[in-house]
Image (cartoon, rainbow, N blue to C red; front, side, top):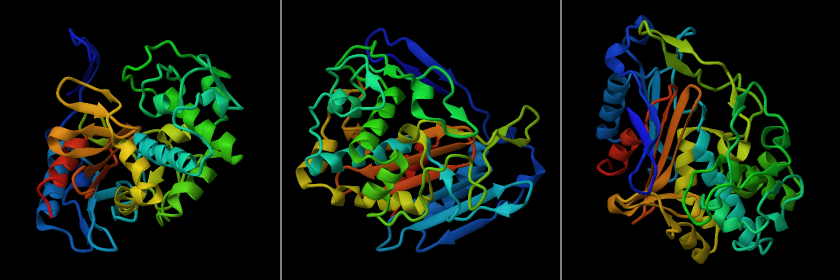
Length: 356
C-alpha cells in the first residue's frame, strides 16, 4: 500500500494506491527467472535482486551501483515474457520522474553559463507558453514551491504532442507560494524554458547539456515506446498473470520522458555535480522547503532525507518503476529499475546503505 498525505496537520490523505505482492503471481512464464550480472556485483546485491523479484511480483528488475569506471549491474527476470527475452543491464526503461533530475541539471548548467539566474522570474525566459503568475521564479519551479498546477489529463499517450496541447498556452498557478507541492506542470515550464533559452527542443538541449557530457549513451527522450533494447511494461491481472500495458509514453519530456539504463543512471548520479561549479552543486542539495515532519525536504529538484543520508528521486508510470539514490555524505549512487509499477524505492534504499 502506498499513501500520500498533506504536509500540514491533520495530514489528510490525498492519494492511496494498493499493489498485489509476489504471492499473487501465478504466471508460469516467470518460473526460474534468469540472472545476468555485469561487473563486480556485490553478493548482497545479487541476493536482494532475487528476493525482490519474488517478494514484489516483478517480471524483471535491474539493480546497479558504482565500481570504478564501469558501474556494476545485476538483471533478474524478463524483459519480455511472450518472447522469452531475458532481462539484461543494457535494456532501457522509462524512468519517469527521475527525469526531473536531468532537467534540474540542465537548468543549473544554464545558470552557471550566466544565461539565467535562479531568482529570475521564469516568465522572463519563456516564449512559447507562460505562467499565470508572472512573478514565479526559476528556483520556485525547481523546488516545487511555485504553486503551478499539473495537467489533469493526457499525461501518457502513444506519441508526444506539442507541449501547449498538453498544458494550454497559460499554466495556472493556484497553489500557495513557498510551500512544497509536487508539480509536473512546473517541470513542463522548466522544459520549455530550457528550450526557449537554447532555441532547441528540450530533448536535444538536455542531451547536449547533460547526457552527452556524462557519456549516457543509452539514454534518450523517445517520442514513442522504443522498439529496440527496451523492456515491455507489465501489470498484474486479477488471475495472477502478467499482461502488457499500453505502450504509451509521458507527454511532458522534461517531467518524465527519459528512457535510460541502470548503468547510465549511475553515471548521472556519480557525475552530475562535476558539470557545475561547486557552489551551484551544493545549492542544489540545500533544503528549500520541508516535505513532511519526519525530516524529508526538497532541494532544487532533489528529494532530500538527511536522517538516512540519502537524496534522489523515484519515478513510476505505465509498466515501470525507477529509483535513483545518492548518499549525501559521499555521493555514492544506487539505482533500481523494474518493468512493473510498484514502489521500488524501498528496495533501492536497502541497496544504497549496506551494500559495497
